[in-house]
Length: 260
Image 1: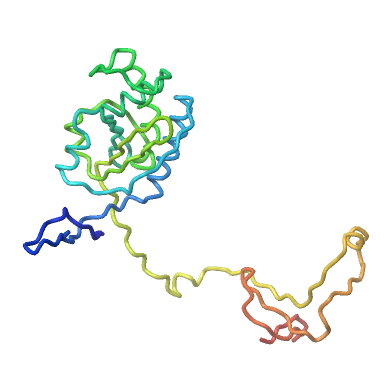
Image 2 (image 1 turned 60 degrees about the vertical axis):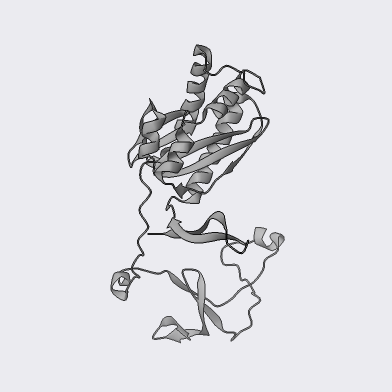
């Protein structure tokens, strides 16, 4: 298990000092690159749908306990994305949902109504559809998308991160998966037995030079080129274009040879 060092809430000691106790908590194996990919996609999709220039930032994926998940999902809107590997969730708290819907209608502030109208709910569904389509890096190929109750999403979600938009519309969009990715196992090093059948292209470079464009354009069959390498200068042995050895070029038994 991967763990991370964190600190609890400040506590006041009898002598008046403040202390934050250190503790280790499980750390998510979800790559930060996957969260960044989601954030970039969310920025592009929301900028297109809202006709606004948005900036995004992403929080580090974290494995949260049940109480934290309950707070994050409470009273909001959740959508389940069924994938090939696991399920993912897209979550919007009520204030963020109303703020995004208001931006879709060209308003910077949402109305004071506690619930969404039919038209506003349809607009939210369209925004959510664009966000759930981004979840393939989290759960694999997307098979189906459906609305989910926030309570059930909070119970089943395990790893959670947020994409936060900035600019004219500030909102936090939660993404979660039902199963944290398995920790990558350390691969065993290759031995010589596994590499016996691997062929490596090799060559010997015994002379080098530079040609002007005018000389290059006049090249013809049987032309003689005088290179910059001096006669008797050492050659270079290359394996897969990597220089490995320096040595003398010559001949043996009627074939070209190289003495390292």
